[in-house]
Amino acid sequence: MNPTEPSEASSPIIVMTTRDDHRIAWLAALAIVIHVAEAAIPSPMPGVKPGLANVITVAVFIEFGWRTAAWVSLLRVLVGSLVIGSFLTPGFALSLTGAAVSVAVLGLIRLWPGPSLSPLGVCMLSSLSHMAGQFSAAYLLFIPHPGMLTLLPVLMTLAAVFGLVSGVITSLLLASLHGRVANSE
View (cartoon, rainbow, N blue to C red):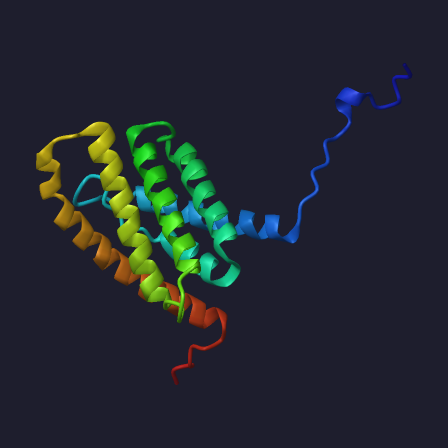
């Protein structure tokens, strides 16, 4: 073998990517940054966060469809948990379950007959389903005690409030992306 010729072991691996792959990577990176930033915010109750990364997931769902939103959500949970050090912990299991249930609900919304929901409605359903998924996983896997059920109304109320906030933010984001925000002068 000639030392000036590259060997098979040193030849580069070329991965062909599409425009959609690049879009998913950029949007997932944005959601991961928000996810990591939220992890640094003190919480009034364990596991309760505003869910601002959901703004990205819902905006992606509305703009690019369910498949792209599912990838962004999954990558956010996986990479975000690796970055903050919670991968394969109970918190990761809860986050992944919440995200999976939320993405499943987005899939059902996509099949919704009749008029489509507003970003506010999508965020509300996404937030409530995320919390329901997390609560179910916590109850079934970690704390199967009837006393847990007393937390459910409080958690679902917080999920509704945070869903409302993220819905307003998502609506404003989408409006600004489409140039619908009037300049205030």
